[in-house]
Length: 505
RNA sequence: GGCCCGUUCGUCUAAGGGUUAGGACACCACCCUUUCACGGUGGUGAUACGGGUUCGAAUCCCGUACGGGCUACCA
Image (cartoon, rainbow, N blue to C red; front, side):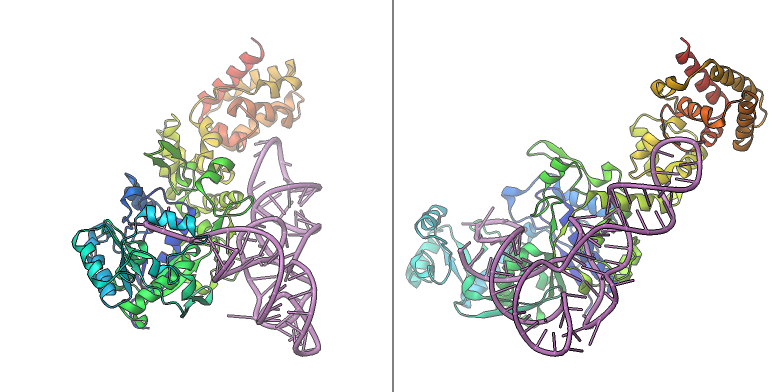
């Protein structure tokens, strides 16, 4: 194939981009880049009734965060603009009329009420060759009658005329050969009464006009493939049709069925890439970004949900994914989303990352939690020290805030049971000794501490635990001497004193 | 209901006719350890079912079951 690979994605601005949507973008992007091609983004905004304010911005922001920038889009420009389907309205009408003229489509004047009535009357009603002649359209009506209705500006749609006996086959890159029978498919609406195309018409016309070579989308689209194939055959020729692939669905973790926003709320995990505030319902759905995920981990996790390279490798950079991606290795079956595994990916990425590559994000999270981070070098040290124990970026707050401010609460309850006068004495003398220290280094602190313990005939472990509680407030965190050396002499002494006071009010 | 797609440990998956059916998450045990983690070692755990084809089937074919998707002037 010497034609340049051009892959497209066409989201509709009707809500936040959920996991399935982002994964579709990802696979589109990876395939395009793997073949040195272009990733094209169109906006499928032909249904104005469902249009949601801000949704288009949200799509671009998500793509930006994930690092999946399109080569062509309404925002990035490109040789085939406009890329918003509402702005291409007139183009679709021409092709729809062309189809009518060629006898592959027809005008239908039935009102919604009439169709509803028909559906009640006939069980399993379909607008197809069985019922076509009994309805109000340019097939059943005479040419004169049709013309009259048209001239009177009677509201009408254009429907495809499905052949009644034709085998429609195509090769899906993931599922190999799939076949349908035309008699099973109804006469789908191509052009709506408002003059807007439906997805079926728009996708075919735009794919042709924009010279798309590969068309990938979710499995839920598989049943409408025959409509698209026929449209290609009637309009542009099957030989020009892009190659198709239909991705497996992402399923709910419990039970079965497509993963939905509700599942996230119910089970307590995000299903959108970023926070999505729905202006219509006035509700906010938390996103992976705000939950503390790294974009690198997010796309890594998504890529592994339905694809692998055949080896045991699980952690991939975006560059590695591009290099190794192949459509043949995409799994056929749907995958249940597992939040625990998603967090594992993030943990792995945090552990592997060098401090500079995510320092800014951690700093931002600290600031959002009213922890001011003035000393940059200190921040580096702290991140280095605690990153292995953080699964989410937001865990840094819990794991490291005590480096930057005195703990607000001290877990006295953990201290009390084993507390005695001997220990009080130990710490009082430790304060004295520490105050006299000239250098404030990890090893010296530890040495002094242990010698002091020996002098008091206390096992170091017994007081080490107490020291930890004093410094961090609870039973967690890295090595105590690491902590003491970073927070400094004054702060260390202060925290010991504070706790002693609490123990002996 | 009709059409289409799918089905390997609880979950994500590897194995393209010959493997003790492999790995990862989760879980359990042990080790490491001043706490909590990290880490290390090991363990429990799967080819939906029934028929073929074949010397040999998770793998190919048929049927059944189960699950899912679609069945709008939504995408």
